[in-house]
Each structure stands twice: as C-alpha cells, then as structure tokens.
Image (tube, rainbow, N blue to C red; front, side, top):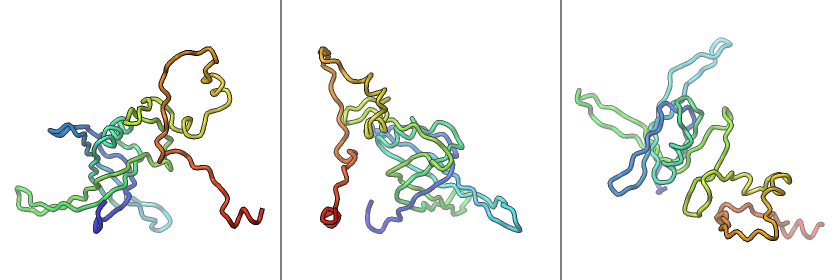
Length: 181
C-alpha cells in the first residue's frame, strides 16, 4: 500500500457471490460486495437503521481463494485493504459515489462463523487439501502415528515446507528474563 491511501478493514456479510474473471494477461480478479447493517439501540430495543455497501476487488491468488472460500450470500466476511471513493455522473446526469476497497486480505468473520482453513495449491508446492493448523502446529498423536513412514518405506514423495514467514517462531527468553531465572 502507498502513503496517503486510506487503509481499513470492512466487516459485514457477503452481499453477492464472488465471480472470478481473468484479465487479458491472465491475472485473476474478483469483485464482490460486503453489506454492513446499521443498528441502533433506541428506547430499550435494537432497530435497523439502513445498511452500507462496499465494493471489494481482489487480485491474483487472493481472488482465486476468495471464490473457493465464499460461495453463498450472507456469509460473515472481513476484508482489509486500501479504500477509495469512485465518483461518476450517470446517464441521467446524477453524480454517484461508490466506496471500493482493493483488498490485500480477505477472510471469514469468526465471531459469527467457523472456518476450516486449508492451504491452496501455490508457489510453495503445498497440497490443496492440506490443513494449515495440522501443518503448523502438529496434529494429534494418533494422527502422527498414522502419518509416520515406516523404515522400509522407499517412496520418493516430495516433502512440502512451510514458507519461512509462516513458520511458528520458538519463543526465547529475553536477556532480562534469562538473568532472573
């Protein structure tokens, strides 16, 4: 993101099903809308007070992953990126404004949903159905017994590695903590 851009997070519900398209050069792009309902607490009860709609654009692998993940309207969703307001005059000479977020991250709102996170096929060569939490933090002892190769296993399957930026870091005590222990 560039200096001077408005960077924000939009939280709401998916208002339309994302449709994946490709540019002439083959780059993936998706557009979808996030709706956020306004509610007010008036005289002891909650009442609806309209809604805001923000158009979201995502590019590349993010666009493809959005389409794989969000398949129906109403799903709780969040998007993070740079916000701009597009202004134009319609055929009827009326000036219109539309908020557009160019997303760099999109995900489910876990306050209102449960997600089963999987790593897509990507440049690191990981499998599409590989569960990220198992990969990063290990699986149960029962799972690990099943997945351990026997000593006579001569298969030449390639091992997949977690990209360095995604590897959980081991916490080491600071110098101050080490002296007190």
